[in-house]
Image 1 (cartoon, one colour):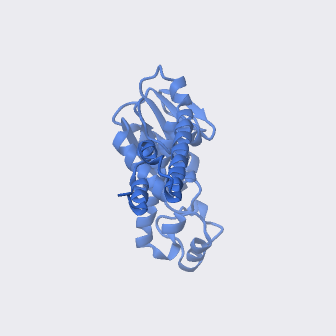
Image 2: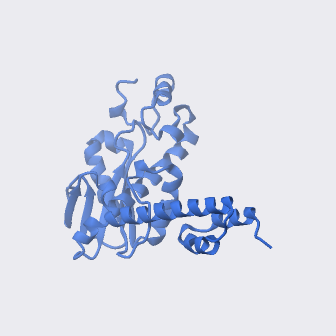
Image 3: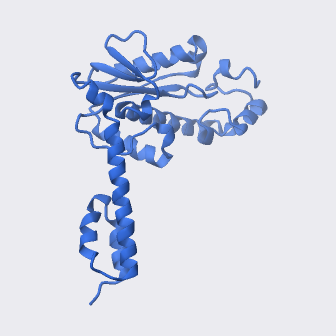
Length: 252
């Protein structure tokens, strides 16, 4: 008896992409249009996976270039521009055989994908460090110096000391090991991209928690950036303890 199309469709839908080639071979002689459609969709998924593997392989360029260093650490920050909340830095050392796909500049990823990758990175990384500077500290020493401070804290929290840092564009003062600043590094280096995801997810989660405390500003959606809802809240209710006073002078 011929297998039902609905059953075949279910198998293709729930099979991981890596296992699709086996299914294609199993059903390639089936002449039904519905089966041929599932095979075509499966081939497209396999092609997309191959392209992603090639894209990810290219992200290892700098890690391979500096492979004489044992502990290569990527570092990045998020939250330099918002009116509220901390600036957060992430530092990540990935294993040389790390197989995580889809790592990218965190801004180019959906929230769901960032959360998935955060979990994978935390599980597979050799070491992860997170640092931050509070709004009051940003007001005290300015955003650039506060960012450097958060980065130094992230590095200090690594369980394995780095031998070299791959940084997103900056050179961090007060760090003894070699540093390689890479313009738009979060989209060019697997380690920096991983660090950007760790920093972004950490900060976004904090801003969602702050939204529960200060619901008038829309922090859950704007993450502290100057959205229309946020500006309205500032003008109507004034600043909260997590606002950066040096950033909001034009609004209050």
